[in-house]
Image (tube, rainbow, N blue to C red):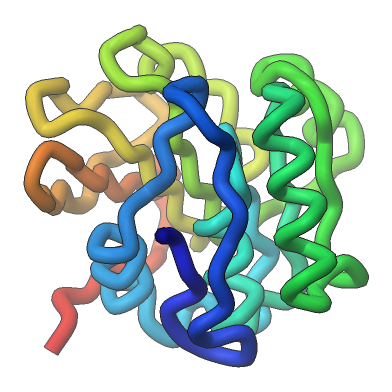
Amino acid sequence: MVRIIAGQARGLRLRTPKGRSTRPTSDRVREALFSILGSGVIDSLFLDLFAGSGAVGLEALSRGAREAVFVENNRQALACLAANLAATGFKDKAQIIAADARRALAELRGRGLAFDLIYIDPPYRQGWGDIILPAVVPLLSLDGLAVLETATSEAAPETADMVLMARRVYGDTALNFYQRAGGHTDGVHDPD
Protein backbone atom coordinates (compact mmCIF):
# COMPACT_ATOMS: atom_id res chain seq x y z
CA MET A 1 0.00 0.00 0.00
CA VAL A 2 1.29 3.43 -0.99
CA ARG A 3 -0.15 6.46 0.75
CA ILE A 4 0.41 10.20 1.17
CA ILE A 5 2.48 10.56 4.33
CA ALA A 6 1.93 14.17 5.39
CA GLY A 7 0.28 17.45 4.54
CA GLN A 8 -3.07 18.30 3.05
CA ALA A 9 -3.80 14.80 1.61
CA ARG A 10 -2.22 12.87 4.51
CA GLY A 11 -3.26 9.23 4.76
CA LEU A 12 -4.83 9.01 1.30
CA ARG A 13 -4.13 5.65 -0.33
CA LEU A 14 -2.78 5.83 -3.87
CA ARG A 15 -3.43 3.53 -6.79
CA THR A 16 -0.32 1.83 -8.17
CA PRO A 17 0.13 -0.16 -11.38
CA LYS A 18 -0.10 -3.93 -11.12
CA GLY A 19 2.90 -6.02 -12.10
CA ARG A 20 6.54 -5.09 -12.29
CA SER A 21 6.43 -2.41 -14.98
CA THR A 22 6.98 0.27 -12.32
CA ARG A 23 8.56 0.29 -8.86
CA PRO A 24 6.84 2.69 -6.43
CA THR A 25 9.13 4.62 -4.11
CA SER A 26 8.48 3.22 -0.64
CA ASP A 27 6.83 5.23 2.12
CA ARG A 28 10.07 4.98 4.11
CA VAL A 29 12.17 6.49 1.31
CA ARG A 30 9.60 9.23 0.59
CA GLU A 31 9.39 10.11 4.27
CA ALA A 32 13.20 10.37 4.47
CA LEU A 33 13.33 12.43 1.25
CA PHE A 34 10.81 14.98 2.47
CA SER A 35 12.39 15.15 5.92
CA ILE A 36 15.64 16.10 4.20
CA LEU A 37 13.99 18.60 1.84
CA GLY A 38 12.07 20.17 4.72
CA SER A 39 10.52 23.55 4.05
CA GLY A 40 12.26 23.72 0.66
CA VAL A 41 9.19 21.98 -0.78
CA ILE A 42 6.84 24.83 0.15
CA ASP A 43 5.91 26.96 -2.87
CA SER A 44 8.32 25.02 -5.12
CA LEU A 45 7.95 24.10 -8.76
CA PHE A 46 8.43 20.31 -8.65
CA LEU A 47 9.29 17.91 -11.50
CA ASP A 48 8.55 14.21 -10.96
CA LEU A 49 10.45 12.40 -13.73
CA PHE A 50 9.65 8.71 -14.33
CA ALA A 51 6.65 9.48 -12.11
CA GLY A 52 4.90 6.11 -12.07
CA SER A 53 1.80 6.50 -9.87
CA GLY A 54 2.93 10.03 -8.96
CA ALA A 55 3.50 9.28 -5.28
CA VAL A 56 6.55 11.56 -4.95
CA GLY A 57 5.08 14.55 -6.78
CA LEU A 58 1.74 14.13 -4.99
CA GLU A 59 3.58 14.08 -1.66
CA ALA A 60 5.27 17.35 -2.70
CA LEU A 61 1.89 18.92 -3.54
CA SER A 62 0.43 17.67 -0.26
CA ARG A 63 3.32 19.34 1.57
CA GLY A 64 2.84 22.71 -0.13
CA ALA A 65 4.55 22.64 -3.54
CA ARG A 66 3.09 25.34 -5.78
CA GLU A 67 2.88 23.11 -8.85
CA ALA A 68 4.11 19.71 -10.04
CA VAL A 69 4.84 18.34 -13.49
CA PHE A 70 4.68 14.57 -13.84
CA VAL A 71 6.50 12.77 -16.67
CA GLU A 72 5.55 9.16 -17.40
CA ASN A 73 5.05 7.05 -20.51
CA ASN A 74 3.66 3.75 -19.16
CA ARG A 75 -0.09 3.61 -19.91
CA GLN A 76 -1.03 1.71 -16.76
CA ALA A 77 1.01 4.10 -14.59
CA LEU A 78 -0.57 7.09 -16.35
CA ALA A 79 -4.07 5.78 -15.55
CA CYS A 80 -3.10 5.41 -11.87
CA LEU A 81 -1.52 8.86 -11.85
CA ALA A 82 -4.65 10.48 -13.32
CA ALA A 83 -6.85 8.69 -10.75
CA ASN A 84 -4.52 9.72 -7.91
CA LEU A 85 -4.57 13.36 -9.02
CA ALA A 86 -8.36 13.29 -9.06
CA ALA A 87 -8.52 11.63 -5.61
CA THR A 88 -6.15 14.15 -4.01
CA GLY A 89 -7.82 17.20 -5.56
CA PHE A 90 -4.50 18.47 -6.93
CA LYS A 91 -5.43 18.43 -10.64
CA ASP A 92 -5.34 22.25 -10.80
CA LYS A 93 -1.74 22.26 -9.51
CA ALA A 94 -0.46 19.49 -11.76
CA GLN A 95 0.41 18.72 -15.33
CA ILE A 96 1.03 15.28 -16.79
CA ILE A 97 3.34 14.84 -19.75
CA ALA A 98 2.74 11.40 -21.26
CA ALA A 99 6.07 10.94 -23.01
CA ASP A 100 9.52 9.41 -22.89
CA ALA A 101 11.70 11.29 -20.40
CA ARG A 102 14.12 12.63 -23.03
CA ARG A 103 11.31 13.95 -25.23
CA ALA A 104 9.54 15.48 -22.22
CA LEU A 105 12.72 17.22 -21.06
CA ALA A 106 13.20 18.72 -24.54
CA GLU A 107 9.59 19.98 -24.45
CA LEU A 108 10.06 21.48 -20.98
CA ARG A 109 13.31 23.19 -22.04
CA GLY A 110 11.35 24.81 -24.87
CA ARG A 111 8.97 26.32 -22.31
CA GLY A 112 11.81 27.96 -20.37
CA LEU A 113 10.77 26.51 -17.00
CA ALA A 114 13.12 26.47 -14.01
CA PHE A 115 12.27 23.83 -11.41
CA ASP A 116 13.17 24.20 -7.75
CA LEU A 117 13.11 20.44 -7.16
CA ILE A 118 13.51 17.61 -9.65
CA TYR A 119 12.97 14.00 -8.59
CA ILE A 120 14.32 11.38 -10.99
CA ASP A 121 13.30 7.74 -10.44
CA PRO A 122 14.32 5.76 -13.54
CA PRO A 123 14.51 1.98 -13.84
CA TYR A 124 17.47 0.75 -11.81
CA ARG A 125 20.75 -0.45 -13.33
CA GLN A 126 20.08 0.78 -16.86
CA GLY A 127 22.39 3.83 -16.94
CA TRP A 128 19.57 6.39 -16.94
CA GLY A 129 21.30 8.62 -14.39
CA ASP A 130 24.19 9.25 -16.78
CA ILE A 131 21.71 10.18 -19.53
CA ILE A 132 19.18 12.23 -17.55
CA LEU A 133 21.34 14.25 -15.14
CA PRO A 134 22.99 16.36 -17.89
CA ALA A 135 19.60 16.80 -19.54
CA VAL A 136 17.94 18.27 -16.42
CA VAL A 137 20.61 20.92 -15.80
CA PRO A 138 18.92 23.57 -18.01
CA LEU A 139 15.64 22.93 -16.17
CA LEU A 140 17.02 23.27 -12.64
CA SER A 141 16.94 26.71 -11.04
CA LEU A 142 20.32 28.02 -9.91
CA ASP A 143 19.41 27.27 -6.30
CA GLY A 144 17.47 24.11 -7.15
CA LEU A 145 18.05 20.53 -6.14
CA ALA A 146 17.85 17.35 -8.23
CA VAL A 147 17.42 14.00 -6.50
CA LEU A 148 18.26 10.79 -8.36
CA GLU A 149 16.93 7.53 -6.94
CA THR A 150 19.15 4.53 -7.70
CA ALA A 151 19.78 1.07 -6.42
CA THR A 152 22.28 1.08 -3.55
CA SER A 153 24.60 -1.06 -5.69
CA GLU A 154 24.80 1.67 -8.35
CA ALA A 155 27.43 4.37 -8.10
CA ALA A 156 26.18 7.95 -8.04
CA PRO A 157 26.60 9.28 -11.60
CA GLU A 158 28.94 12.20 -12.17
CA THR A 159 28.45 15.07 -14.57
CA ALA A 160 30.44 18.25 -15.13
CA ASP A 161 27.41 20.51 -14.66
CA MET A 162 26.13 18.98 -11.41
CA VAL A 163 27.70 18.54 -7.98
CA LEU A 164 26.80 15.55 -5.79
CA MET A 165 25.89 17.12 -2.44
CA ALA A 166 24.89 14.00 -0.51
CA ARG A 167 24.01 10.33 -0.85
CA ARG A 168 21.59 8.67 1.56
CA VAL A 169 20.98 4.90 1.63
CA TYR A 170 17.73 3.22 2.70
CA GLY A 171 17.96 -0.56 2.30
CA ASP A 172 18.38 -1.27 -1.42
CA THR A 173 17.53 2.33 -2.40
CA ALA A 174 19.93 5.29 -2.57
CA LEU A 175 18.96 8.96 -2.88
CA ASN A 176 21.61 11.08 -4.59
CA PHE A 177 21.25 14.86 -4.10
CA TYR A 178 22.67 17.17 -6.76
CA GLN A 179 22.86 20.89 -7.34
CA ARG A 180 24.03 22.81 -10.35
CA ALA A 181 27.74 23.58 -10.39
CA GLY A 182 27.97 27.08 -8.93
CA GLY A 183 24.56 26.76 -7.26
CA HIS A 184 23.81 28.10 -3.81
CA THR A 185 21.28 25.70 -2.34
CA ASP A 186 21.27 24.69 1.29
CA GLY A 187 18.43 22.25 0.62
CA VAL A 188 20.06 19.03 1.91
CA HIS A 189 19.51 18.71 5.62
CA ASP A 190 19.74 15.72 7.90
CA PRO A 191 16.36 15.19 9.52
CA ASP A 192 16.26 15.79 13.26
